[in-house]
Image 1 (spheres, helix red, strand yellow):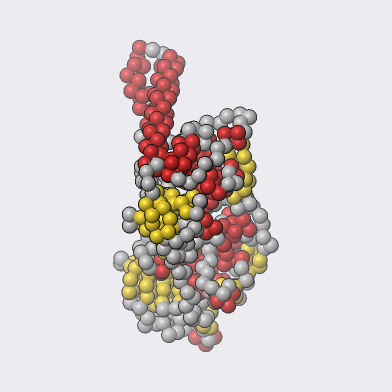
Image 2 (spheres, helix red, strand yellow; image 1 turned 30 degrees about the horizontal axis):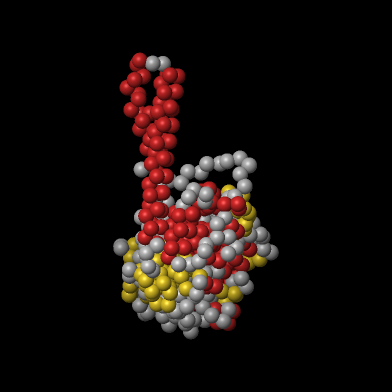
Amino acid sequence: MRYTLSFLVILLSISNLHSQDYGDYLSNALQEYNVYKENAIAEYEAYRARVNAEFAEFMARPWKEEERHPPLEAPREEPDIPPVVMPDNDIVDTPEDNELDVVDINPVINEVPPVPIVPIEYVPKPKEKSIDFTLYGTECSVRFDSEKRMLMNGVTEHDASKYWKHLSSGDYDNVLADCLSTRSELDLCDWSYYKLLCAASRAIYPEDNEAEMLCAWLMSQSGFKIRLGRSDDRIILLVNTCEDICSYPYFTLGGSKFYILDTDLEGSIRMNVFDGEYPEEKSLRLSLTGSNRLDSRPAEKRVLKSKKYENVTVAAGANLNLLELYSEYPMVYKNNDTNTIWAIYANAPASKEMRENVYPLLKSGIAGRSESEAANMLLDFVQTALEYKTDGEAWGNERVFFPDETLYYPYCDCEDRAILYSRLVRDLMGLRVVLLYYPEHLATAVEFNENIPGDYIVLNGHRYLVCDPTYINAEIGNTMPGMDNSKVSVIML
C-alpha cells in the first residue's frame, strides 16, 4: 500500500461538504490526510525495523560452508563469416519470395524491477553533512555524518549480525534515500545502480568489510536478492541476477546462482555463506532498461558516410562516461542459451548523444521516402559506413557492442551491425525488428507494412523480410550467399 492511496481519506470526506464551506473542508481534509500519512510512514518504518531486526538475528546463526563454482565461460568467438559484396550486376535484380525455416524462437522476457519492501521517504534536511563520490564520471553525493561510522570487530556471524543492526539504526536511511533518488534522476539500470551503491559504500567506508556490509544492506533495502559470504577474514557480497553472467564466480544457493561481482574479493574456493532471505527480494536485472543519464564527457566526433546515398552522412558523437559503463557491462545470457546474449545489446536505448547527433541527420536523409527506400538507405549506411573486423582481430576475444559503441569504435562485426541496424529501424521508422542467427552469422528481419518480395520468415502470422547489414550492397530481402536454405534461430526484441 502506497501513501498515494491515502487520498481516499479526502474523498470520503466529500459527504460533509454541505455542512461546511469549501475552505474549512479542504483544511480539515488536509489535516486528516497528514495524520494518515504520518501514521502510514510510522507503520512502514516499524515494519522495516522489525524485518531488519529479525534478519540480523537470523544472521547470527552459523553460516553454512559452501563451495564456489568457477565462472561460466564467455562464448568463444565463432569463425565469423566475413562480409560478402553483392556484384554490381546483381544489385538491380528483384529477389524472389523465399520463406526461411525457423528452428527456434527466443522470446522477450520482461522481469519485475526490484523495489524496497516499504516506501523510503526522501526527507531533505538543510546543512546536513554529505559525502561526495563519482559514478562513471558523474558527480554524486549522499547525506551521511562520518562521525557515525562504526568499524566491525571481525567477520564472525555475531560480528555481521551486530553490524547489520548498526546499519539498520536509522543513521544510513538518508544514504539509502539519496541513492534511490539518484537512481530515479539518472534513470539508472540495475547494473548502474549496483555500481552506484558500491561507490557510495566505498566513499563512506574505505575499509573492505564495512563497505561490503553497507553495500549489501543498501542492496537488500532497495529490494535486491543478495547473500553474504565470509572467507579469509573478508566479508563478500553475493548477488543474484535474472541472467547467467559470464566470467564471474558464483555459488548455487537454493537452486539460484549468487555471483561475486567484485572479483577483487573472490576469496577461497570454499566459504561460509549466510543464506537468509529478505522479504520480497528480487533478482538484479542485467537487461539495460534505463537510459543512464550520466554526465557528458564528449568524445571526438566520427564522420560516417553511406557509400550509395551521399545525404546519409552523420557526425557520430559519444559520451565517454557511458562508453566506460558499456565497456565493463558483463556478458550475460538466459536459459543456458548463448543466443540470448544479443537481445541485451539490441534492446539498449540509444544514448542522448546518438539521438541528438545521429538521428536528426538520418531522419533528414530518409524523409519522404517509402518504407523500402528508407530501409535500404539505412541498410547501406550500416553496410558501407562502418569497417568490418572480427572480434578476434580487433579485440582478441568475443565482444558485443551496444549501438553507441558500434558508431564510436573503428571496427565492428556482423552482430554489431545487426544490433545497430535493428535500433535504427525501430527508432527512426517505428517498425518491428527481430534478429536472425544463422550458423556463424547474425542478421536482421523487419516487418514492413508494404508488400516487398524477398527472403522472409513468418512469426505468429507476421511476415519479416531479411535485411543483412553485412551483405554489402545487398538491398532488403536478400540473404547472404550460402545461407539461403539455412534454418535460422529468431531472437525477439
